[in-house]
Amino acid sequence: MQLNPVIEFRNVTVEFDGRNVLDDIDFSLENGEFCYLIGNTGTGKSSLLKLIYRDLLPSYGDVIVADRNVPRLREKEVPMLRRSLGIVFQDFQLLPDRNVYENVAFALEVTGNRRSFIKQRVLECLSMVGLSHKHANMPGDLSGGEQQRVVIARALANEPRIMLADEPTGNLDPEASRSIMELLQQINNRGMAILMVTHNYDIVREFPARTIRLRDGLLEEVDPERMFY
Image 1 (cartoon, rainbow, N blue to C red):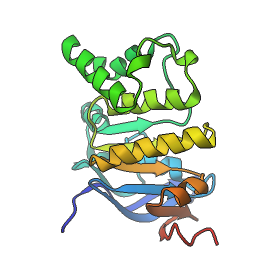
Image 2 (image 1 turned 30 degrees about the vertical axis):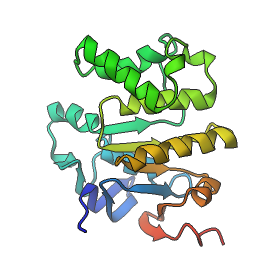
Image 3 (image 1 turned 90 degrees about the vertical axis):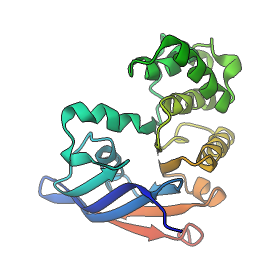
Image 4 (image 1 turned 180 degrees about the vertical axis):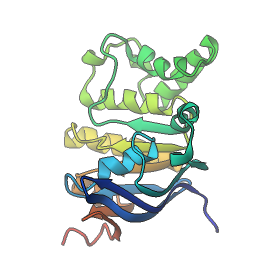
C-alpha cells in the first residue's frame, strides 16, 4: 500500500554561523504515522520543527507540509499552513486569565469561526481529552497533566492533519506522562500524524514507534528496541 507523506524534507540544510545545524536532511512523515524525534540538546530538533511551521527557512532544500512547499509560501499563505498543524508545547502556553473553554475557543476565534460552531467544537475537543467537566476551570486550578490535555484540545480545535508535540511530557510526573502518551496514541489511532520530540527514552521504550535521531547535523533512523544498549 502506498502511503501519502504529510511532511517531506528534501535535501534540507540549515546554516548558522558557518555551521550546518541540519546537513542535507531527507525525511518524510506519512499520513497517520507516529514518529519520535530524539537527540541531544543543541542538535537541531527545534530548528527542524520551526521549519515545519515556517518560523525558520532552510538555507537550501524544500520542506513540504500538507502539500505546501513551505519556503515558497507567501506571507499571507502562512496562516493556512499553520491551521493544518496542531502544536503541543512543553510549557503549555495557556492564557492564564481565560478558563479552559476560553483557551480552546481562542484557537477557533482567531480563524473567524461562528460562535455556534466554536461552542460545538470546543466541547467536542474537551470531550476527546476527558476534560468536559473542567470547562469552567482556570489553568491555575489544574494539574500539569490536565493543563497539557487542554493544550492538546486546543491543538485539535482546527482539525489539523498533523500534530507536532514538543516535549509534551517534559514537565510531567511519570503517571501524568503515561496518561498523555495514551491520549496521543488514541489521537494517532484516529488517523492523525504525530511527530513528537522527546528526551524521555523511558517513554519511547514503553510506547515504541518509529524513531529518528539528530546527531552532528544528520538524521538517522534508530531501532527503539536497541538504541539504549
